Length: 535
Ligand code: G16
Image (cartoon, rainbow, N blue to C red; front, side, top):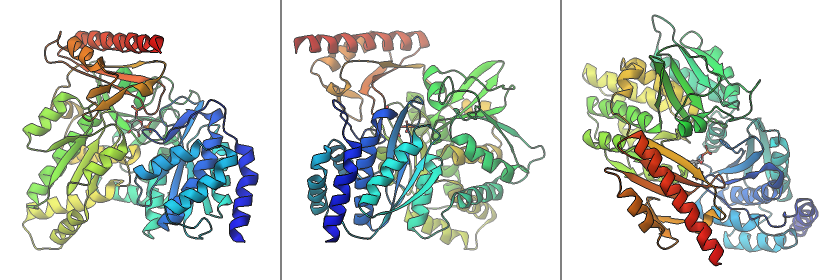
């Protein structure tokens, strides 16, 4: 029977992807992430699972092979839902379960799962679209994903090297039967940019640190399409340096310092993006001093711009900003002072994206530069209706800009490249210099540390990761350390992408933030070591 043939092909292939003894996979903040050399068994199983997800959704599902900001020897997998969102939580749990199922039990596990999700393993519906970043291990991992999907006779389209947001966009476009190739992506966003940005008297040059990753490829394709309007100067394009080493958005945010490999001029607009081009940060130098404008500053720029347009166009739409515990306290106070509602959710684009859907216009950004804007169906209806109405000049101009802006945003997921275009557009339309933007509010000094402990999973958090619920007694110790400083805040959480816990401290001065982060970090280390020695 067709089912027996399918099951037999799984048994035959699975033996080439046996689990690695001692390795436990988990679907973390953004999918699977580990050393590339141990990822293939999970990749094969994710091929099977994504095929099943595609069959159950009767749609195209994306699988991105990337470890984003992690070092070159790592790799990972992010699964993309039909509308371009992150994998559903229920399927994240299935993914963790299936990826740890040994080869001999895979067929039974899949049969159970197909019953649970009520879809036949032999259903011919759906397909998976696979993309990968520039890591050497990418082709091998993509092949393992494809092997799993082929076992379930699922169609596989391998689009090769692309950015994570390109894959999200392509999946979304495929499922709504709209233009869906990489060329369509470049054309769509360059057209939208040109339409809203318009010509300038002098053509600005914009530098982008590409972290030696796939973003360079994307910008290289985009640059000629925009060359009448802006000059995109690509730095750290991967021809020399190593991926994410001393450059890229993660490095810049953590070190609060400029990336290597960018020769800047005073006041020049510079950006840094990460290894798979789904985060971006802005920076500039003034009097040789480095100034970074992070995801929080980008969120306030976008929210302020959109809020003004909504008011000018006299539209009755709710606008809100979604942040995480990492958001600088000053950004939250600034947004409140402007009457813009702010919500805090746990780390991970999936949490922010979901919450942003509660607003008509939901702006979400993590401080590290991940983010985008979502426009609800109602918002799109209201905006488009107003666009064809007879209105006063100011209303008309605002609504025209709003319509154009919705087309410049990759609403499938935060997109470093399209966000750069959106930021440049707002700065030009609002006649804002980097200084004026930066001076909207002053960041509170902060320090972030990575602490390596034996088992980061023993740390559990609550209250959108702002408090520790376990191990017992740890939060009290943090509270005591924080109480030594005035106006301080500090939290600790296990990373879902790296083998470490992150400590984040915010204080009135940089010295205090450094000192608080260090004392909390060493307390966490000692606390967990003591727990371990008692086991
Ligand atoms: C991923 C997630 C982000 C998250 C980051 C760090 O980013 O998509 O939402 O902020 O990991 O997560 P954690 O602190 O749990 O390690 P990326 O750019 O690495 O895919």
